[in-house]
Length: 218
Image (cartoon, rainbow, N blue to C red; front, side, top):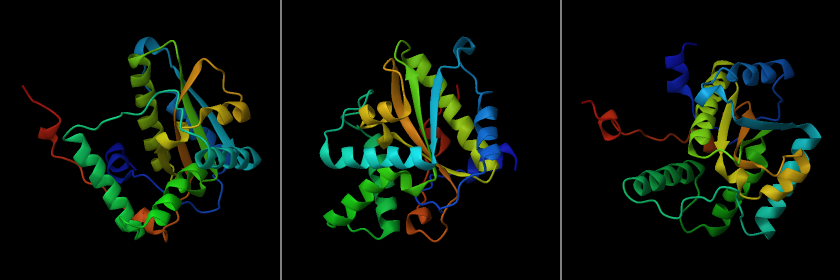
């Protein structure tokens, strides 16, 4: 698979098979992602990959927190999505819920779908990704470069993934289970495993704007 195919075929997977990724394959993806570019080569991403019993403890704690606590992410989520971003966001949500067959007025169905985030859609591996709090925007840009590199490498290896901001909403329990230092701000999580092709959620596809909507050629 070349890079063009990986970019075109990469998508967010929201239901996984109960099958672990072989340890050498998983390690290779993360090792190769170390080649991602970063400002002054500082390589600021810090990652904890949970599998097996650790993954079970982590997802159980995040689910409990989602049911009982108020979200308190290390990096606050946007409070508003002005246009055209709001339109993109709503279209994404509509496409996902339509694929799953969850109606807009189905409160119980939407709650169940929301809670699926905190078990990482049953992925056998869950990575939490953070950034040293002493770095600001430029460090976050570096982590973004690393994330896309990792996602493309996973796709090339036949491993499915989903980057999840929701896994950063309740950082306290995650810190305790994974031993994440206090100075590291948890930015997001990544679900990793093998896609369940029969799951309705995995039929979801999102559109992209034409390049002219984002890029000006001068």
